[in-house]
Length: 121
Image (cartoon, rainbow, N blue to C red):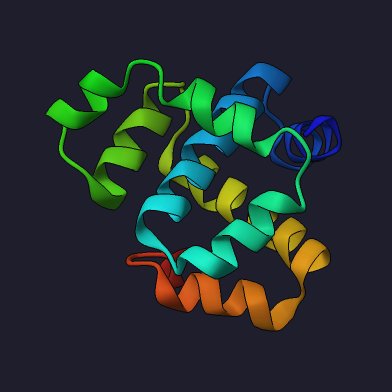
């Protein structure tokens, strides 16, 4: 997770704590909405990903009040101080990292199989 957090913070120009929270939120969304076997392969290839997902679920009652899906993810990320362009940049960088970890085909299947992600790929 440290590798991904440092890499994402550098590429996206955000603080490491925001990067870690963002990763947890996005991976949690992928786990809930994406093709489970492929998402799990990605999570398994990122040491510390499970902990980041669990940490991002704290405050989950607020997320439940906002509803689910991509809009709730966007609201949570904006709550971290990120704008739309920041979120798009972070998603692209995270997907690039995922392609390096599990390959183009697997990451492509996650993007295609998760509602709303094609706009970020």
